Length: 276
Ligand SMILES: Cc1cc2nc3c(=O)[nH]c(=O)nc-3n(C[C@H](O)[C@H](O)[C@H](O)COP(=O)(O)O)c2cc1C
Image (cartoon, rainbow, N blue to C red; front, side, top):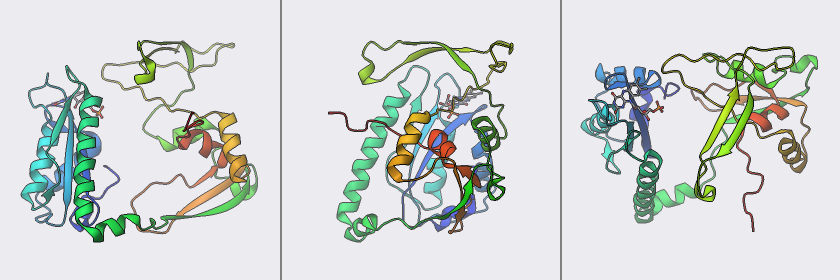
């Protein structure tokens, strides 16, 4: 949300706008929604008549202002003339089943959107049109070459640049065990991470924890899968490329990157999408 300029919202007159709004503090916006919230609270926009929207809030019933930001977004956009495509729902991460509540809301939203599309043949035709490319790719040469000098050399350097506000560590998984009785219906794993001070033998960085810290895990597709995808696409892993935006978007792109890091760290690859 922090990447989206709030003044753009009043120009959204085609695609539905879906808000996923968590509440933090005491009924306050999350850090990445703070500027958006301020913009509308300061009444810097008086018309969202072209906006078709739906809101899912994330909250916790233990708090006095349960799902306040979801309630706020839903009411604010409607008050400024937006068309509500679906009723507000708020998932509860205390007693509730947040994922289940979200899935139910999402499916119901899709049914509404498909129904609306079927009734509107113009928008059905639009949804079949190929998406316009938003960037151009330039191949710069192999990693290590002068032209490709800006590319991060390894995963930690790339992740640290991509997430400058976070301390990024390589950390060994000391143990992993499955807790779900029927993991085919959804897996819940107990993981233990080796976070001791580094030693000569174990170079895992020291992780520390303070109350309310979050742990984010950056998944890695692995070298073998990246290599097989590159081979299938006829591309060389060590080549470095650069993406240039062709549309006016407020998006931060990692400027130059090897295909290896792209395929291992930035894409979700499913090695066996259709097991039979
Ligand atoms: C410091 C803190 C304050 C919170 N305040 C509220 C609150 O006022 N109202 C509410 O409904 N939920 C509150 N929550 C719960 C979060 O909205 C809920 O955990 C949500 O799933 C967080 O989503 P996120 O992890 O994507 O930020 C709070 C959570 C934290 C950690």
